[in-house]
Every structure is written in C-alpha cells, then in structure tokens.
Image (cartoon, rainbow, N blue to C red):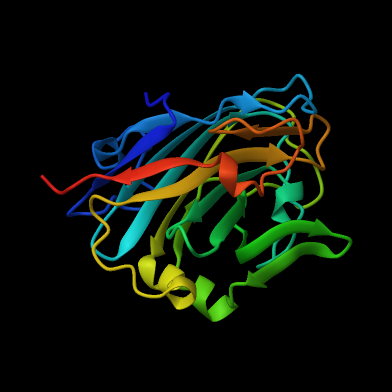
Amino acid sequence: MVTSKEYPVRFCVNPPRLGSPFFSSEWGQGEITEICHFHAASSPHRPKTMVRMLYSADALHLAFLVHDCYVRAQHRNYQDPVYLDSCVEFFVKPQKTRGYFNFETNCAGVMLISYVEDPTRTPSGLAKATPVPKELAEKIEIYHSLEPPDDSEIIEPTIWTIQYSLPLSILEHFVGKLGPIEGSCWKGNFYKCAEHVSQPHWASWQPLAEELNFHRPELFGDLYFTSPQ
C-alpha cells in the first residue's frame, strides 16, 4: 500500500483487461493506494476506496475499487455533473508549464472531462476550463461494475469498481507531444465524492486544504513513472 506523497506508476507490456478483478494478477502489476483523507464537511460515511494505476506505451490504465453505501447515479450523459453522484475522480497535470485534466466518473461509468488552465472560482465556474470534446472522450475504454437505478439510492453496502484505459493522445491534444514518459514525474490526485446522496462526502489521496475544493493543483501529489524492467 502506497501511503506517501509519491505514487509509482509502473509500466505494463500487457495492459490489464478491463473488467478483470482489482486483486487479479493483471491489476496486481500496479501499486495500491487509498483515497482516505476526508474533508471536514463530509458526513460520517467513510467509504473505503482503493486505486491502482499503470501505464503502457500509449495509455494510462486506472482501476478504482469502492466499498460504499448510499450509492446513487442520476446522471447518464457525457459531461453531466457526475460529481453530484457517487463518483471517483482522477486529476492529472502532465507538464509543469501547462494545465491539468479532471476525469470524473460516476458509478454508472459516465464521465465529465475538462482541461483546466485557470482554476480560479468565478460565478459561472472555473476561470478557464475547456470541456474535452466527446469524439476524444469516446477513445477512452471504460468498464463499470454497477448499473444503479436512475432515481433511487442504494442504501445497503455495495462494492463497485471503475476501470478505464486513457490514451495519451487525449492529453497530447491539449498539452502537445509528451514523448517517452518513463522516468518523468507528473502531478495528480485521486478523489472519491458523493454530494446528492443522503450521506455526502469528499475524500482525496493527497489531503485537501480547509477549503472544500478539488481544483487545487498545488496540493497534488507526485506520479512517478518508473522505467520498464
């Protein structure tokens, strides 16, 4: 279990098959870390959420495993406000001098994705955030284990997983060619949240400040891409 501010993203020649168990040998190529820092505004509900991340020659591969209750997914269209649902999120900043991406996915596998160059809060949202076009987002292969009902909350204990393969070309569309990424260090954070549920909560891999705001790249941890063995 990785508990430091640095997460080692390991190289995989053969990416895990989406839908293979979180504790399978395929995903076992990646280290486990936990999204365990809950913001003070959260309810007493503390879902256990684990993450694994790998990279291959042309993609990032992520798996989230959530032991949850009070699960809900009302939003079913790309770029809906899925952060209001039971949701896991991956924020990543590939280059120091450019912006970062937020990949937000509810438990039904619906995503919201933006490229953020200025996260300053304004009355209409972030100062400069560009939605990732749907035709780019459709290149992401995604698996979700749960088909929650549209309007009701699953109160009983529920285990759900999100897995996806994220082509590096999507990032390069905004930040330019990345080149070989082994040995590089990116910035990022993992989150678990649910706002429009009976037990709302907001959790992160790297701790948040007093303000409830995931869009704080200065608080991101280090994602170190290890060299292939």
